[in-house]
Length: 125
Image 1 (cartoon, one colour):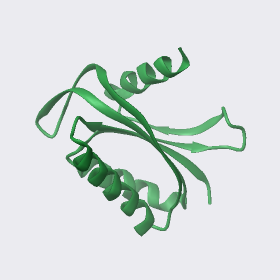
Image 2 (cartoon, helix red, strand yellow; image 1 turned 180 degrees about the vertical axis):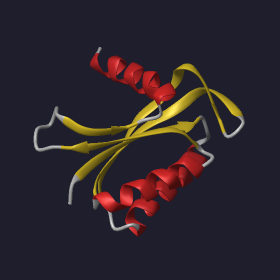
Image 3 (spheres, one colour; image 1 turned 90 degrees about the vertical axis):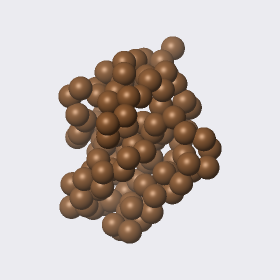
């Protein structure tokens, strides 16, 4: 099974609501046969621009990375599930190769690319 990394931006919520959203996401992966390797909290940050999702305006969000192994056939279904979750502002999925720094597949709405690029820049600093 190929290895994937799922980057999530969740709307700013209290800890119990954030945990429930992450639990739903991980359960969705497990129900589809994925093997979750790691869940990393990158913290809550001010978004680089306002994002409107599910008729709500968001200025802050919680950034998370989920590392998992999965069959490629479930990815489309998983992304559809993530789009419908009202607590997920944005998501990006990448298929990993053997080389740690090399990425094969990137799925991200065009208008949300800057939010993740901004996050990558902050991590590098």
